[in-house]
Amino acid sequence: MSALSTGPSSGSSAGRSTAAVRERGAAYRRKARALAVLASVAAPVAIWLLAVPLLGNRLHVPDQPGEEPLDVGLPPVIVIALAAALSGWALLASSNRPCAGEPV
Image (cartoon, rainbow, N blue to C red):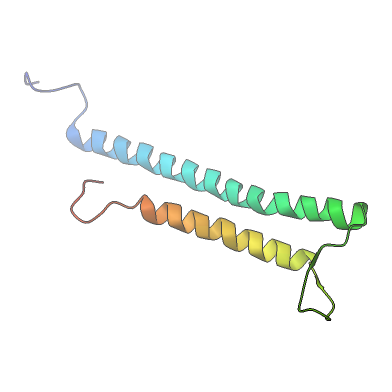
């Protein structure tokens, strides 16, 4: 062992263990972000389920004067919440990407 050696492990096994730790960290982040997306969709759905069927409120969007307002149903609530959550995830993923020439 030379004086510059930092331990009994060789450079290749240290590289493999670092890669494994990095992969586990990435998997954990993906799982946490997927759960955040699910929670971001579940919250407005829960509010809609509480407000419309249980409490009997009518959620609607005013339309042009003289026309009937548009009712807000469950499918638009799910689609809009999912689109917002996924675009937030995409923006976060693109901002966390290293630029060309930066170390990973």
